[in-house]
Length: 380
Ligand code: SOE
Image (cartoon, rainbow, N blue to C red; front, side):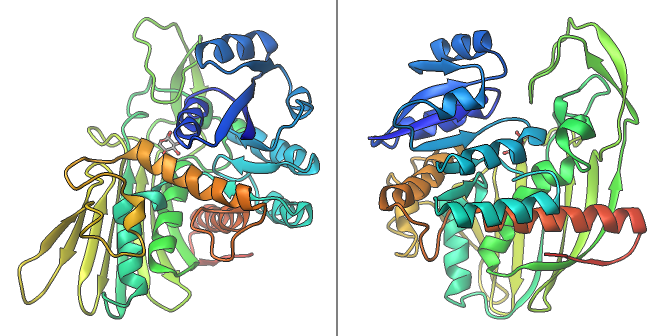
């Protein structure tokens, strides 16, 4: 059995634990949170045998092999560093850190440590996203003309919606782009096999002051009875980005956390000279395939109908719809196969620290582009 420790038990820590438990060869042995009391309470609720009130104490747990960093953004770099210095395999929530400098440092540390390193970019692990990537690899779209899409949510729509992500000190200089645009970029770079090299961005804040619940808000939660205090907002609620890929092809995407009715709608469409593909995270089992000279198709996640090289990313016969928790399981399965082998695979299908750093360079360029109102080339 592989022994795992989880740091952080907010919205996402329990999702990691659930996915790990579905693998069968991994056990979550310890959990750590900001205080021992909170960690003990969460460990009891989540049936985790050991609880710790500090990362140091968790890292000293006997026979610990892997640590997942599921903390708020401002703690990512510091805790990833600690895990690497302890020589443990590391799986970090996104974004990898808060600045490009930290990203470069973490990539170097991960390489030196010789451990398996992963970043939680989960959307590339959906069966139909992997199918789209397989089709592109096989050349079935032809020459790529355009890539576009958006990632829209509504959990920050109201003036009374607040969360640590709003505070630049805790969430970073960018919010919507770093929180969900990061997923869009990773997913589309994975599908196309191309890298974004230049961006032109326009970011907007719709609530320059938000009314924060004095009791604090979890991600996606809303408390009707709360008492509020005013807090200034310096991070974007939505943004539009034009980009250029390394092969000269182009695209654009928008991100928004204030789009009423859109819960977690990551969509992309890629247009090639032969056909198009489009995908929507809220109907994840369908891949739309667009044609000019015949009727369009909707391919569903039936392993028997998918390309053989990616058919193992759907686990049930067609019609048994798989979604976000299943993509999470796929991501963990990829990562833990590498942990079993003890080395980073040649062509990892899970996002690693290099991918996490790459997205940090994109976010940094987007923020600079907005501030300077011009095209910005990525600095790696
Ligand atoms: C909040 O916007 C959030 O939970 C992100 O932080 C996740 O990465 C995304 O998968 C869903 O939305």
